[in-house]
Image (cartoon, rainbow, N blue to C red; front, side):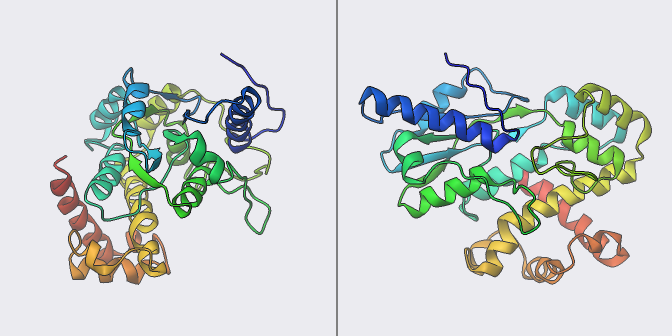
Length: 292
């Protein structure tokens, strides 16, 4: 086991340093690159079968990446349900993503907390690259962007079929503080993430369950679901990455028109009585489809 120090703050820098170091060691040893690079985060707990699932996932030679999802712990979901009456508060998200991927409605996206690459595919994709927006703020999609480059090299991305449990500190911080983006809240630094969050997950959860009204919990959950729909379905539809025919297997024409109409003014629909009601009816249909 190797412990590598990286002086530059930031998740993407740490990932790049670690993964590039593996390739360098393989090159120095002059061995064939029949190796797998598995990626997770410090605030996640992989299941015992994680490495076995990853190894089995690369059974076909054309697969260059495995994309997994992450869920909240059973204890967190149960505590939120007791406090708010809302079932599957966070875990509707991985269920929704996995449903889309299983039914081939969307292009599979990579995520930092739960991904794996063959060493050859990683090298062909030019590795992790930190990207910045026009204001100089760190972009948060370095692992997914690497997956896109690997796909463009001719490799396939397959679902990992294995979730990790991820800490929900960020989401709870946003719920409590009505913060749009806890990665970069007021006074953000371009050198890292989570710069103002120091509380423990359990402390944040206890405070939120005792002090945050149900309406706020519902609103935040609706925002999470909308973000998945927009990122996985409607923005790719606008860009031509997926077609109407694919999503008509899941969405009605009325739902497609509704979501396309709100892409230019995201989230305002939740505050509108008519569109908010439409979205809540859609969620009922969604939870039945996912059999939650």
